[in-house]
Length: 243
Ligand SMILES: [Zn+2]
View (tube, rainbow, N blue to C red):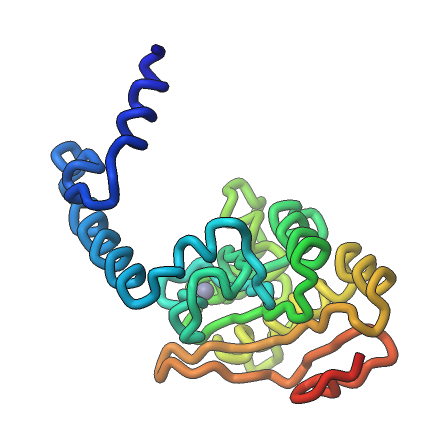
């Protein structure tokens, strides 16, 4: 038996009743111990409240929305939406950006739309976004060659901030956060993946929404820029089934 197989066999042989310290290398990474202990408590709590939860979720997922959010640790979509594991398909990156070349997000969109047939994509920005702050600061300086990943990645957002500047100066951070969400919604509406979805599903195709999460009080604000397939009225499907 190879070493890897032996290790795997050992892992499988351990049951969920094993103490967390027996399931991980807490002696090597003590700073992660607390996380393992919390995970253990969480798994036990969920299984005790709903014994069918894990067996029910194991075979597959059926999320109803795709969330495109910021990597920011303060905006965990499942938590702020009071949702459960399995509810939301997620792609998060700095400042919730989308570009046609982003195949990580393109692939996530394809899975969400083709496999799970989600009807809603939500782009959610948030107040006090560090990605937007960084782009805003860069926009006020003379352009420089983008030699680092973060500079290249934020280039479209920096250009947006620059374009929003008036003779009074750069836009406010709040305004850039909102306009950035609106820009990503536009980018998604023009994306090949969404256009293909509309061709494939017609009026049942996906609707793209723009939201902003307010770190100040934990609430989400709808920017009311939702757009679905051509010929559909935003909101028309809410509350009743048209198709
Ligand atoms: Zn952010």
